[in-house]
Amino acid sequence: MSTVATPSPPKTDVGGQAAPSRRRRWGGSPSEQPAGVLTYIALVVTILLSAFPLYWMFIVGSSTDEELGKVPPSVVPSDHLIDNFRDVFAQENAYFISSMWNSLVVSVIVTVSVLFFCSLAGFAFAKLKFRGRDALMVLLIATMTIPNQLGQVALYIIMGKLNWIQQLPSVIVPGLVTAFGVFYMRQFIIEAIPDELVEAARVDGASTFRIYWSIVMPTLRPAAGVLGLLTFASTWNDFQWPFIVLFGSENITVQVSLSTLASGQIIIFSRMMAGAVLATIPLLVVFFLAGKQIVAGIMEGAVKS
Image (cartoon, rainbow, N blue to C red; front, side, top):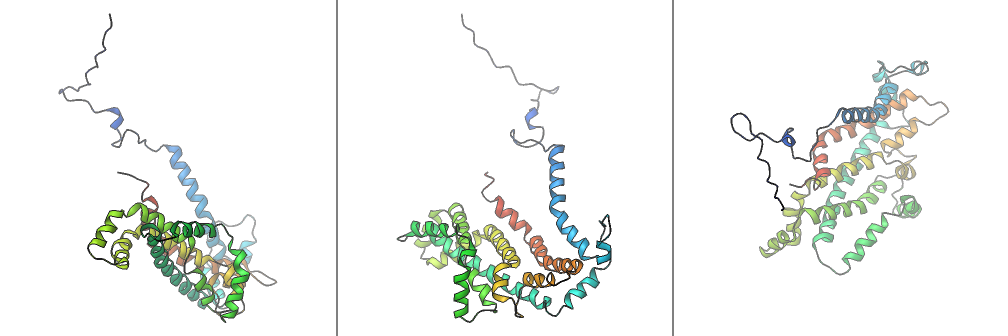
């Protein structure tokens, strides 16, 4: 004779109320687990290893050559940072102040252009139907597999025919649109904006550009924050192409200026690192200002309700 097992009644406390489940102890879902000590140790170690190069750059930039020659080296910043800054500004062939301004102009123009054109193209690839759309997207992605160095000779010839050698447009125009930016925006728009919303706007009489400006652009803020930061940082840190087309003129960017500080028969490391500290400050400011937007853009779509 078979028996049917009856479920045991839920556990109750003294007052007769159901006792809270042990799985809800930490206030989260049953699958969530509290972070352990090893997790925090790993995070602290990762942060220290990531921040140490910046800290060491600051130490070298605030020291003198005599202090850098000590064994063991000092791990505490010295008090010669301002003097090293003045030494950087005094180098006439480095044009450091103007190079900082040139890099700022180039980075801002390129960033704004990439955000506008890449989001516009991403919207077209994501929501507009036209002949050859998929083939063009495949061709665009294929260009990302080609190293930039392979096209620099041809690009230099084009810049020479346009008389842009040693001029800032030679480093601005080639970066106005990026294949990665178009692909990134396309993927974000596909996930974030439903087709029904676009069709409803068309029924209401909105033009294509009006849909892009009023519906797509406000939705793209998290993705635009990530792409804008990546574009600004990569443009600010770009060295090879600006060095090719701008070296020898006064219209140099900050990375080319730093290479000038590092050239010569005798390299003064304290002066070079002081210039690197100055060149890093704008990037740190942008990171701090756009930090929340970056996290929101990276986590967009990673957490589902």
